[in-house]
Length: 130
Length: 501
Image (cartoon, rainbow over all chains, first blue to last red; front, side, top):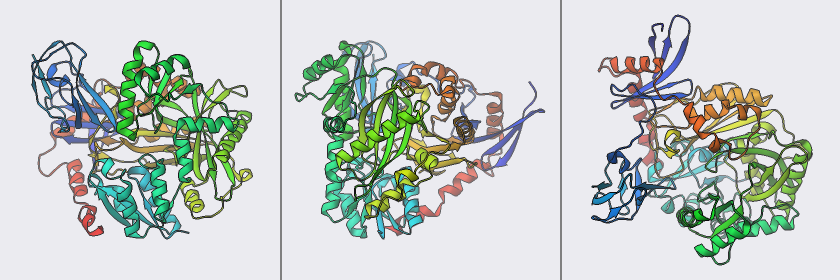
């Protein structure tokens, strides 16, 4: 592939060219993430990870946290309770929508890290499964 | 004509109405919750009044707070926009009782059209065809499940009040009924404060085509043709256009007449929309009355762009007691317009709404493109409200010209800091079915996997090159992007917000 040249145009605009053609890109840095917009597509480049798109979470840490800032509408389990895969653990509410947090696997609830009515932030663990 | 109008809404529609007021020489009064103190609609209005905390129930849905704000500022009329209290008859009545003109239909018309049961009866009485369905008087889960069996599966379970696809659930087999009924009821109560449910037969592969109507206080009624709103995801419209590729002149005339007949039977006044489901295409297609929305629609711009009228100005003129600005004979469709709704949501994660900062936000400027937006760079999309960021409307002589313009506009609409559906909209507009015009309401959800697969899953070489240039820059002075953000943060609105009071 031909080498790409990036020229800042000011105001978050960049011109990306190889010998044959060029495109205009828009980019900003937000913490460790770099957001890039090119021709209607958005790429989030995180740290040294070169993946675009959103990384799909599979582990409990992420599955049992709020995907976005939300209000805890209901907590359906208590510590010590055994749950099956798919059981509704916590119901969050944001932007007029319900966001169910379901058990990613069977297990026992060891701790609950939120309270009904609380505003929770993404990434914070709502519940721990053993 | 009014001297001062209060806009009981936020976001892009508040901005739209404020601009119409300015053109007409009418003072605009914005209202805002604490979450919106620095919003564009507050900055643009002549005055702004704080009405409460971020929760909509205590601010944009608070009838006493809004009526007080109108009284305090001496507003003679209230424009409700869409959503929030726009279809709440108690609000319309509270305005009337306070001697304030509600820019919309009379309270009793809102009430009858707001009830799907009453609206159906009214439409049937006016001679319009309706989809089979019922609202059980016994609202227990078992009775609703029984009603679904009587209507015949598959069915749609939806809140009797409200709209916008909220709380609406499609059920294909009896086993899915209990969960769907429970969830629809919870969402209905949360969104509209009323858990009454309605069950309707699910028409397969229907198109959603609606007719814009407008009426004045003297009983004059016109329709402003159709809007095709079949492109939906999870029953939420994302792309609308006019004219519809399924509607022939003969079908248009029949649907227009039906819409006018329904509005006349209801004693309608001001702007409204009669929604129909269309089965098939061409002169022989069938259509069924779905519901009437007693307010301005989100997608009203496609009608404005193809008929050359201003619906908001007409709403204000009619509410002030004036005659309809046009006769039916003066109205005509010209060219084609398509609207794309830009939502703060992540298509890769089930359309999960996104909240966060608009680090970079640049609306496209180009021939034939209109952007109705309510956000600014440096602002924030809050978790408290609807995730609609902006509407991009493209017009052209032909559908294909409008489609190409809309694609060009979306490819030049960078929004960074939060995920939006712009990449997904580009994919939908390029989809062969959309290009051909052979669409139905289930198309986007049915083709979802292939539409998502077409989105980039890895950063392109160009994106990586730009990202590299970004992080490789010297730490001081700040990069151009950072410098711009700093400037926006220091915007004068921030300091003027308190002064406006």
